[in-house]
Length: 220
Ligand SMILES: [Zn+2]
Image (cartoon, rainbow, N blue to C red; front, top):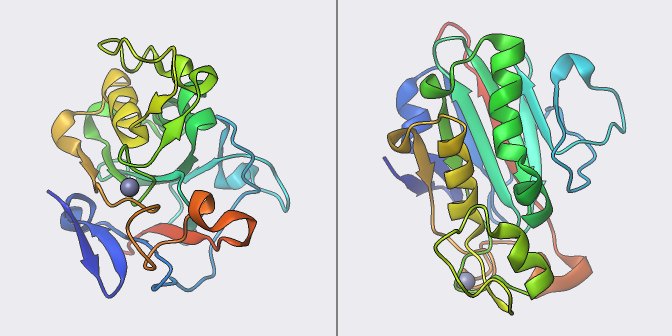
């Protein structure tokens, strides 16, 4: 499993090989086209189902088992997480920055898919797309210390340090019951990865956003 670059977008081989969903992690060079459902992202740990959706609703993740509903999240340094249950035929799209990660949004998506769609964590496939990497993601101690549950081996979280957001999210998925071999992630860094990515930290308030999209495949 790996995440490949395809026409400027990133594709998880793990999700693609399941054959029952279409997805991509868009970049600054590759904009997937709509329509899709998206939420007003607020750096929370709230994940909603498509049937709970209404215009302007605040959340950071969407889940559905409806074949006609494409889900999208937008990011620029934060991590896009796509989830697929190939057995119960359900999907989720999650936006996870540090706030969402430390509040447990990846685990919440797994929990919600179980509650609403009967998804078993061990069946879920997960993919983490381009995000700011540990090479560039420096945070202050007030943020770093909140990752101590996910990095118990580290003794530097009381000072300014670098954080691997995708590693924290992977560990959170593992703790929620997702198999190690069912977690795909790219190490591509939005901050130092060049113009193919939008980066909020690098480009400031003018930074564009990248869309990550997933949809169940009809008859897949
Ligand atoms: Zn970097």
